[in-house]
Length: 109
Image (cartoon, rainbow, N blue to C red):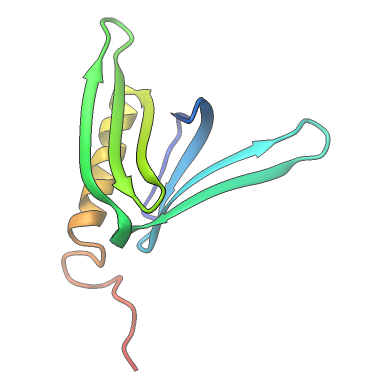
């Protein structure tokens, strides 16, 4: 796990936690009070393009992260500082998905 949010982001008017691995971006949430079930949305780094970050608001500034992927255009919103950290983590993965030294590169046979 390279990044996980301690805040929630809004995607399609629903709240999710964000997790980043060396392979993909994951949006996670639990539904239900008694019978809990999980909803997980994933996207591979190779599919993510056109990364964009914007800020809006006065006192309670919000950050918005937009990008294109196999599911179309994705828009994630949340607190400015958290979203800026998320943007940097996603940017790092889309530019160099295996790390600077290739330590996360899958092993070749």
